[in-house]
Length: 309
Image 1 (cartoon, rainbow, N blue to C red):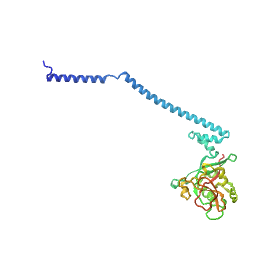
Image 2: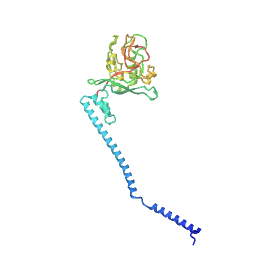
Image 3: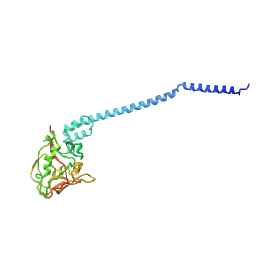
Image 4: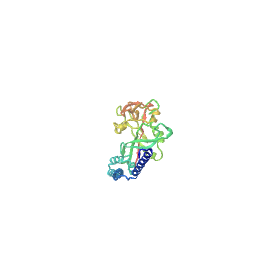
């Protein structure tokens, strides 16, 4: 009998096809090997363990930071209570995000020379549509006995003529003095802020180099520094330089195109009563001064404020 007939070949092909199908079905039903399952479980376990470790480290780190902040805060309180207020404030400034820091720092912000504080508002960015901006001040001095601090604006905030016409002038008779104690103070402060400002006896010494007379003692709430005060508080410091606001530049202050600094008025006379001492672009005292009727100098108001209970 011939097995190579077309009928036999077809039957053989069908048998082979059935065998292939059976093998595929068996393969599909065959469970994965134990080793494969173990590998998958180990991989999953490692991933979970890694995440647990990462989360644990984060929690421990956060707890450590909080504990560290508590220690710094408590040590700062010890420094303050023992009279080392400057060190205490320095420590508080190192933990600004700790919840209790702000309240304690607020009590002592005026007591540390060089601190930057905010008080009052004044137009600074040149955009009057968004309202006035908070005024920033540098703490120059602190009188612990009288609980008062001497502060001066961080920036040259406006352009004001010292005397609006040619002629001899002292601080007492200057237009700058009237502007500071009338226009500026009314514009910058309200309510309790006004109540903080102390009216002080302001003595203007003679020019330290030319001996030009400084004039009479005045009673002022806001004033400009004298030559002597500049040398005492600002000479050689980063705050000696008068950086200008956009508003001051818009109002005519002559500002360096790159540095953004200006010549700023002091209240001391210059080489004669037609001149007024100034601070240069680079923060140096100019005892010879510039003409009092110059319309390009900046002003950095200063004042004593009551910071007691």
